[in-house]
Length: 329
Image (cartoon, rainbow, N blue to C red; front, side, top):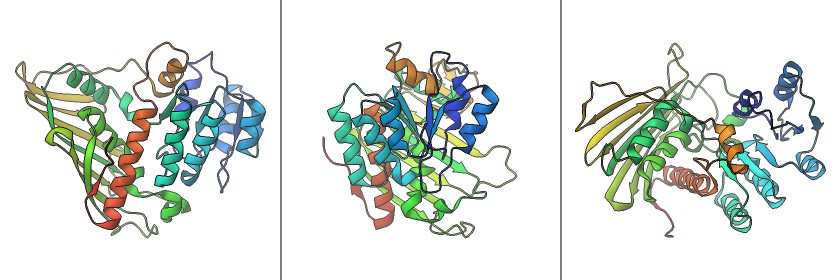
């Protein structure tokens, strides 16, 4: 494991249920990062990984099968590329890159090492509501998807200093908005053609350049449309930290999903009939099972790279206040 910024806890929570997976080593990501949370977890769970001060030295000395990248955001791409070049599978915190050059380096590694499994930590794909909605869409429950609206909101709370600087944060669109943009791309199943985004730093609690709200309009292939609303203005007294929601309108129905529930309107349901939700996968276990050839993961290198490209282009659109087009493939 490299670093403890972001959602490293996803991996630690699943390790106990994965007896064939051993945590052999850990290192800080540098730039003020720490391994304290990993050390604390190991003490409580009878694990004794070798601790390193330098993550590159760790990769070379240990030669692990897989690496978890949760270092400083601005170093994600460097860490991902270094691991892939060494033949190491990578489970990485998002965003995987903060610049187009860094994304190009990851894409080059993926093309050069197609057998290496790279997956971004899109853990909300595994929430029963979102997973079931995606499955139902794939089964044709609402016909052809034509319009998608998604929302992702967080409580701002107290933020570390690296959130105050775009160079070490990357922007609210790629950090907070990554999940909602991922759901949109996942449900639509087609490539974006362009994006127009807007953002604001107003009422950000004095947290430097951190944007407090943003919105994105994606034009998708086949005249489909996707919109995403993003903010860190969720009231502190709200019962949950996040407000996660998506609505997909199809040619034969509408589906709305939250992490734990779904509303479906189509020929067989007027919206009042309950829809059972379930997911038989977990994020890190899915990553491991894919590596071991036990099942195909629901996110891999193509989806990770395409999502990262969408995040960077949306951030560029908001910064430059113009419509930005996706490269043709």
